[in-house]
Image 1 (cartoon, rainbow over the protein chains, first blue to last red):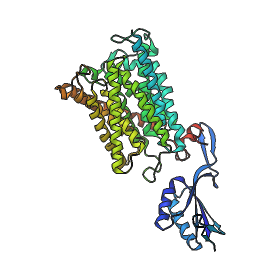
Image 2 (spheres, rainbow over the protein chains, first blue to last red):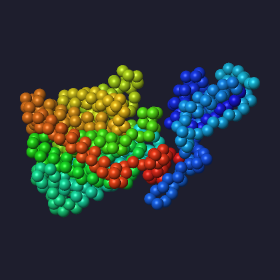
Image 3 (cartoon, rainbow over the protein chains, first blue to last red):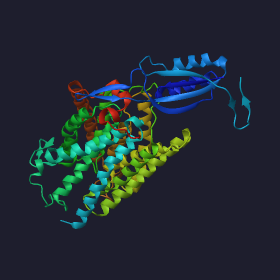
Image 4 (cartoon, rainbow over the protein chains, first blue to last red):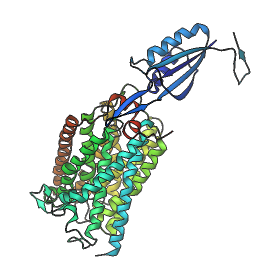
Length: 110
Length: 399
């Protein structure tokens, strides 16, 4: 079992959500976050002086999935969240030791 | 001089003043949170800038001695010859009239910030605003209220159906064409970030409108009372119409209810001193339907007149201005419309509406093109992406 954490542009959330849902991946947790990548945010130029906008608004999607589904989910997210410009985000995959459904106490582990 | 009248118009001035930050809050709730400060700030910028040019020269252009029916002269520039004594036919100090009218000019410019939401360069908007008040608003005020050519023609505009709402609504449409769509418009949803803020703004607008229309009687009398009664009625009917449309299509969204109410308020504005409550009900009913259809049309045509000044104020003002010629009744004022057997008023209203729609759209379009060519109306893509709060003000609404 793996946890997929995708940091994406906020405006792409609807698009990613829809694409995942169409492929049967409904469950997810979404958080509003701020961050910066290799570009270190954005530099703006105003009236002769520079302003750094260090952290940009991003959206984090967390999905826990079977190992066999991970690549497919990554494909769906990359294709639906991509604009081709800097700031499209990043996907991380983490191992998950255990998953427990609170309603039933059902435990899932590999 | 009448102290009761003076007191009422001073209060009305304060009521109308509060509408401008009300517009700011109304609009701010409908944009993304990265642009919330900018949207409110634009309204305050209108208050700051127009207050200065109004006393400097714009009041005089609007209400100074007539020059060829088109504009006033500069005899009242810097409020020269404006004092405590009333103008002929008025019972309030001339100074009170000046500041009451100032608040109308301020809010008119604030309404058209709808067109440039989330993408305008603050400095260029200020330049556009000064030119626009000088070349569009002041002439309109003169044409209809300053004894200009439309007033001489017999056209009526009680509190600004043409001067305020057609001018700002159709200018907003022209400006939206020049400034272009927001990045991502039509590609993904641009959701309102704070609906309670928009509802608060709408509440301040409805509240202030009692001074806007009631004060336009320029006296504390029965006509002012009628204006307030018909204003409230039209707003309520149009709000109910949007609520019903919302219900039929799904849920009665609060944003629709208040948008409808404002459409009703804009539509009754030119007619508030000429129609009775039966006329107000029809004006509200029709404005609720046609302003909704106009908004629907704008969305279908993918025009990013972002916060619907055109659909609500422009079309609402247009309908209300025509409605004066239909529903004006001598039981309220001295003028009779079509249903009371007179065709001449409707003819004058049609000519006035056509003239103001064309002039507002064309001159605003040309002014926007000039400002865009010289200074650039729009922020850069990067500035738009991080939001105008940071890029224009170096502030954020929410830490």
